[in-house]
Length: 289
View 1 (spheres, rainbow, N blue to C red):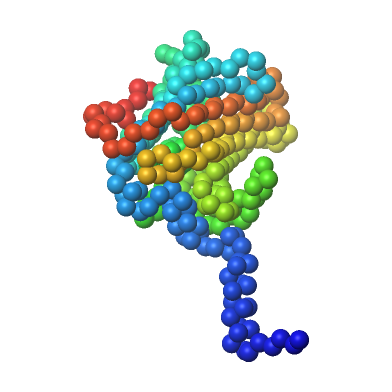
View 2: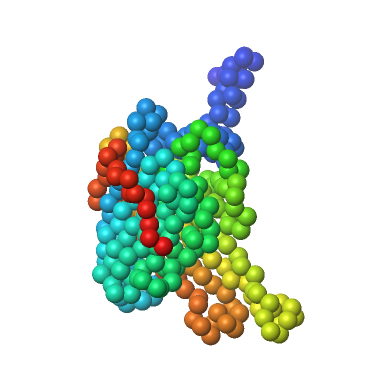
């Protein structure tokens, strides 16, 4: 039996095929962002969130270390303001605090007179990450992709496969940032935000050996990854229950090797409770430096 199609029918079939076959990477950045926002919750529910307070169980470890620190953490956010706090069962690393109070980025110190923590130092030297509300992803109400007006430059990065999952990426360039490269990755099917990658490369400083000596030394590369998983309903929103921060500092110059400055560290968080629209006291976002 011979089957024939009219010209209009053929065009309709072709159109439907193209619509189905169009990959996510052909979407514009704004279309990806719109689908991502829809994946979090209905617009009226998102607009109703004035502030967000999340409590977590937390762990910290240096990669390869035997000892894991256990503790608690919180993420508090309201508008552009955000605060991240951690407490651990450790004399060397009992607390960590960092955030943006609406005016300045603040990073506390684990103990009096100590240096910033590894992640604290990274965020202190790349303040736009907290100021823009990127850190913490959708666990923070400061998440910049929720805003109708964005000053950052956002463009489609392309696809990436990780752990067997197809992801689509966006390049995010804050207005005030010059040194840090930021990439946001979303599940290609659900458009949930599952990963943020930050990369900073610091050139070797000129030492006593002069330019030729420094040229033989490599730069130091800092990489921080945020991974989000186990998305679940929290109130009216769909948010990640599991959150992981990975910190990697690497360099092959003699000073870095001699002083054991190459470090890999990991923080893991599991959300235990979330509260919306709390009556916050003045100073809720204050941090002692």
